[in-house]
Image (cartoon, rainbow, N blue to C red; front, side, top):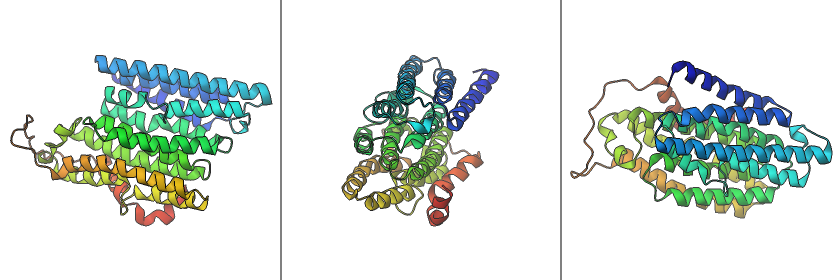
Length: 346
């Protein structure tokens, strides 16, 4: 892709995100989301592969539908209450339509169907944008309207997302699809707490983005897209593979690592809100995700490829690991001890 075109699309992505996150008016928020959608489409389809074109088409149709629902929700609220302010969403029908629109934007169950297919058709760097940056504006709208949304509906959607994200990721061999279902499961954790402690949702999103960025950049560095390819990368960059192993365990939420922090705080808050059964169910469902993270981690560092493998062992490279990956993987594994400092800052 032309560097000037790539620069324009990147600036448009940042502009759309800033417009949506800083706006108080529904029309401005909608305009920012549209700029975001139009800017990411060329980045998804830049390889001109039929799979990439299909992914871009699916993404456009789903995001256009979600934007239409969001606009319809805000217009319905303005019709009944005369308010265009984002925080003044009070009409119940508007709240219901907005929940559907944001769930479709994010890829929450039952509107999750597009996300794994789009992520599978996009390059790893674009997949990283779809899994992190593109979710920030809808999460912000969720945050601003959290006091108006139905907690029971959000809890049901969250538990279903955690369940489906865990179950569907079990039988996958494509790494991008595994990370897509991982994203759906993490969104379940963010959604279940948003009605009770919205700041905790943002903290969860920030830490999830940190760990996912580290994982995507590491995978992009070793050019691994399938589990079979991942099994032969230990000969190329052993140190990076070891850090990727720890980052994947952190994404799974194992206790000594950074990923345990948001899960711990969410379970604590749900228990305070007398929602111990929901906390128990979503904790048990995270074990499903732990299985496929362990499978990824196992393929990354522990398994030696069989002698009958179709993939040649890769040459060990002396090229140093990029400093960004080094910093992100370190943060993805070692932030838990300073958690008393992190939570007040959020």
